[in-house]
Length: 408
Figure 1: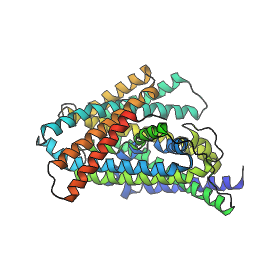
Figure 2 (figure 1 turned 90 degrees about the horizontal axis):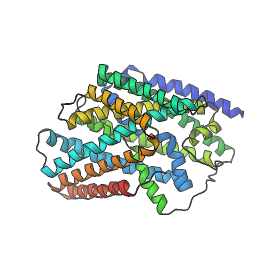
Figure 3 (figure 1 turned 120 degrees about the horizontal axis):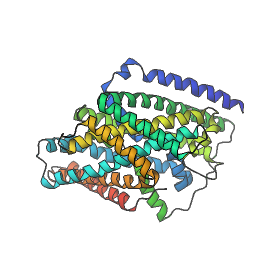
Figure 4 (figure 1 turned 180 degrees about the vertical axis):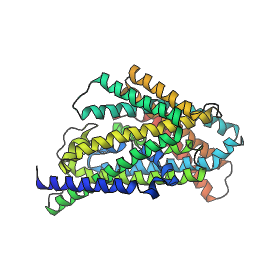
């Protein structure tokens, strides 16, 4: 093992410990702002931070960083639209003042998002179980499904009997540990890049694939990687609109910085990688520090767990809102877990996840169209005209994602 690997490992362990200590300071632990930020942040940084680098290298090679920046920017604009709807459409829906067309579109969007959540929750937990098995070099499908069932059952029971606050508590702990690991890996990658610069061996030798229509369709499909900011929309039973708008913005900014920095610093480590798969980032992390693959597996497990809880609590709020609060969130958590367990055993969750991706895109398209109509009804100045154009453009882009986007 090269000497710098040992030094990097010590540094990463120390920084991980330091970040964990910071994240559990009383000022952060009891902050409502941080708690409201955790749910969208957990969902945005699900499996995405692990797959984003190899994914974009596979599509664009050395230009992967530009694709990441574009994806994050597009997601932020979509988040702006969701925040606009929280501020202006949501009150109209509550008071039944929304126009018939807009209200109809909103009601159509509920089953789209509900379907996406029903698929994404078992997907996250199945991926979690596979990462657990990877740590012991096993791929047994029966064991993976059994682990997923236990975790989904745990989430459902906690949600049913302890409610949103306890699920949020579990989610917050998982996110705090996960972010500490991610920040520490970024420190490790900075040191790795600096070592290459100091020894005059830093160069980007990644092969750039031929760019064509298939690559464009793959890029359209990647927007779902940073899906999750919409979860703030369905936390209205606990947090007011201004808090949800503010914390969704925080979640998108934090996650956006993480994605761009993480991809930018990881690129050079892929110089000698000739085949790419969904766990490539774990394989190449050993170049940075010998301890990183093990820490990343922990981060991957925590990512899937926190993302599954985030989508569960959001789905609970969604089903409650869609039923005019006749369905109680606690019962919804348990119902969702039971359905997720059924999907885990009865389907290949990795084959139907593309259905969830399209459902998310359709939901975003409907939200953008609602915002377009809402602004168009009350155009007052040049700003509202520009808003109308932007919102309609995003509607078109999300329709393109739903229709033409393909998984890589």
